[in-house]
Image 1 (cartoon, rainbow, N blue to C red):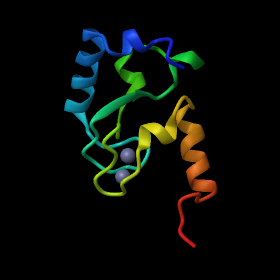
Image 2 (tube, helix red, strand yellow):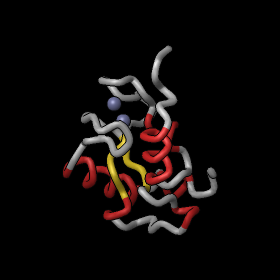
Image 3 (tube, protein in one colour):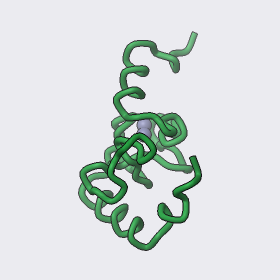
Length: 97
Ligand SMILES: [Zn+2]
Ligand SMILES: [Zn+2]
């Protein structure tokens, strides 16, 4: 889903991202701090509000989480947060052998 990329890199979105990260840097996927990106809780492609601060939440971006080393934004992808969290809690895909 790269159709909205120009908007996601816009000045307006950077402002929203800065504001979101200033309020909290606790990642919505793994629950650790030091998030360096924000993501839409409900993807825009699924009807989420693109510019609503309430629909934006901190997440670990390309650098990944310094604690658990996950790349949470990659894991989440274009799915609604509820799907990701449900997936993670019902089946632990990341558990070692
Ligand atoms: Zn994370
Ligand atoms: Zn983490």
